[in-house]
Amino acid sequence: MKILLIKPPLNPNLLTVSLYEPLELEYLAASVKDSNVRILDMRIDKNLHRELLNFKPDLIGITAYTCDYNIVVQILKEIREFDRSIRTVVGGSHATFSPDDFVLPYVDALFMGYADSTFPQYVNALDNPEQLKDIPNIVLIDKNGVFFTKKETSVPDLNSLPLPDRSLTEKYQKSYHDPIRNKLALIMTSRGCPFRCNFCSCWKLMNGKCATRTPESIIDELKSLPEETNVVYFSDDNTFIDIERMWRLSELIKKNNIKKKLQMYARADTIINNKTLFKDLAGAGLKFISIGLESFQDKDLDYYNKKTSVVINNEAIHILKELNIYIIALLIVRPEYTKDDFRQLLNYVFENNLFRPAFPVLTPLPGTELYEETFKKFIITNFDFFDCAHSILPTWLEPEEFYRQLTNLYFKSFSIWRYVKHRFNRLFSLNKEKYFTDNTDGLSLMKLLLVTAYSLAVAKRMRYTYREQKK
Image 1 (cartoon, rainbow, N blue to C red):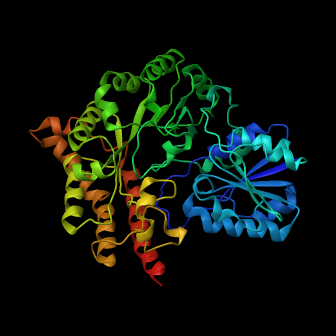
Image 2 (cartoon, rainbow, N blue to C red; image 1 turned 90 degrees about the vertical axis):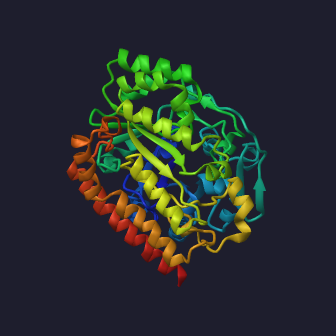
Image 3 (cartoon, helix red, strand yellow; image 1 turned 180 degrees about the vertical axis):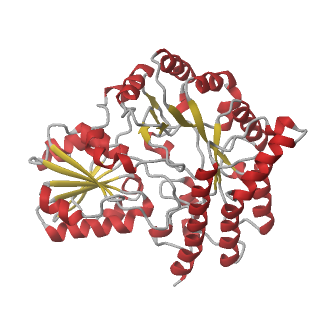
């Protein structure tokens, strides 16, 4: 069987300076090795018609976040118009939490949750419609109607999964990079999260359960990565579920002489409770930490059910700077923010010398508790704008002023003057502790110029798309 797996084009509203490999599709491809599989990354190669003509697939699978919904529907229509005999299936977070949106005449099946086992089962049972109905967590769509199969929530054995098939994206590898143009690869070492943040749906995929890979299996994958890979990004919901596992991983990375820069996501409380572990990991190559600080004030953290505090966040920042681990700080902008809130948020970034902050607008995505609480209040229902750059909910400020304040966060946080001023203060300040490390997140002046230029461009685009969606 010929199977084409598609990563849809980037939503033009999306604020991103990175392009990551489609790891979810590489895993799916590895699960159906007996088939003839291709991956089309339409973020890079948008010529779907050429691929359909040349490859003539029997089955096409496509993944979709909520902000991808409209473009994915257009792609599915195009496929059905090209050849009605091609089966089309959809997976990803939107299909998982809002499956009814994909009950369409040009979709044959949906996959809810992780499809590592259900997708190969589906491929193997295509000639047996009754057998298809025994596969859990899928939706079958045909002329007779819609059939939801039984729901199952189980903890997968991640060590038994085949390694992702990166050979299918080899032609795109030069285009995958992080915000400062490092060549990077993604690896998955765990799934699930025990926490219950109201803006996040990842913990619902396994009902709060978690699964981890052994350090030994992770080492095997690290060894298999292309030699030119500069940065390895651990694309987990919560890499530090098992602290003992991470101690063992750090030991094995050093023992196997793996020389890669590592990027991980960590909670602030995990960092302050395990300072010696992060020191050890820094010695093993940990250079970048993405940290969900979320806010400069405790009332927001309580609202998000984050189970941390500003004091904990500040201590985590101090520890990471002391260890010379570069900080990628995530700070949520609430629709209710006033001018004073925006001012305090910017001051927090400056006071803590955060040089690579991101300011996602609080977005109630399907599957989150926030979505259930607020969907009746939505002022935007076009999924193109569920991009964490536009407010789906009413803003306290007039919309034009809200977006002006939002763009101002990017303009001032990524200014070259700020970078130069920090370097000057580091050289001459009497308060050496505040400047004991640059912690400018690995940014050379040239890389900062690149990020600054891009930040200005996306900020302008943000305001433009706001005006467009008003129409």
